[in-house]
Amino acid sequence: MSPPNPTSPSKTWTKTADRPLRSRRQSLGIWVFAHALGVPVPWHAVRQTDARGLLAFEHERLLALAAAGEAVPPVIAFDGHSLVTGDIGPTLAHTLGQLPESERLAIMCAASADLAAFHARGHWHGGAQTRNLTWDGKRFARLDFEEPLLPGMDLPTVQLYDALQLLFSLSHMLEPRGPGAVLHVLQAYEDAARARPYEAGLRPDLQAFLAHLLPRLRWVSRVAGWSSRLNRSRELRRLRTLLDGMAAFVASADAA
Ligand SMILES: Nc1ncnc2c1ncn2[C@@H]1O[C@H](COP(=O)(O)OP(=O)(O)O)[C@@H](O)[C@H]1O
Ligand SMILES: [Mg+2]
Image 1: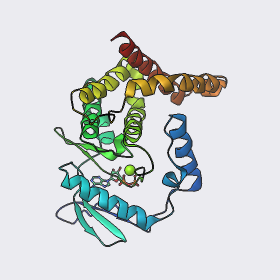
Image 2 (image 1 turned 90 degrees about the vertical axis):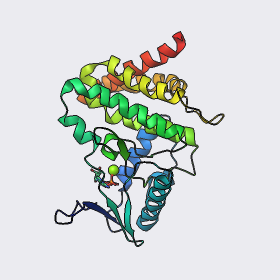
Image 3 (image 1 turned 180 degrees about the vertical axis):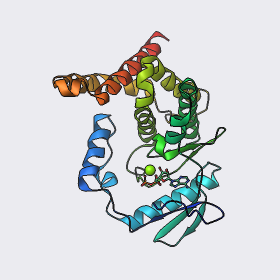
């Protein structure tokens, strides 16, 4: 991805088929992460080998999402080798870092609710981390649509994967606030999803999914804790905060 041209009147971004593809090792990392989260991503979807095919896929996705009225980068040019898109502002990862601590949780919840609304309209992201979202103070927009997860997986599972990717990308911001903040973010997704009609059988059931996943993640966290170095690591602290928040979210469903 080449950065925007500072001399051009409107900022643009160019993605080309020349850029290095994900290595086998990175692909394996993503595959293991997804499977550990109970999301059965197919290996061929993670191990990307056809750069031109991926760019064409992203181009098609951008056109389809824009036609559906979704906030995505406008396609300025595509010739099979380069994809030029218009700038949609700074990423949420960046913006959150600039905000005072006291304002962050509300935006994290708004991002989570916005993802649920996007899902309820029948869409999926395939990379819903905060680095692939922008927020201008009023509206969220999404970018980076080169993950060919559909077809090959079912829509509700891919949407659950989106929700987890967003949550994990927020973990460093959530950890200092504790499990209650994680619960808020999950609840924001759930409330927004429940407020909208879904076609029969297509609503992603985040609570059931997490209830099933929690014991497995607890096990990962316990085993990792056997190493005193890992036990003290930031990553494990963040994971444990997420797990406690997820447990509270699952318990809130049981209580309801
Ligand atoms: N249209 C755009 N508007 C704003 N920022 C963009 C745009 N396209 C890319 N970026 C920036 O470039 C980064 C990488 O682009 P992305 O499409 O996510 O490629 P990658 O597949 O390498 O993750 C994004 O995280 C974002 O910071
Ligand atoms: Mg990206």
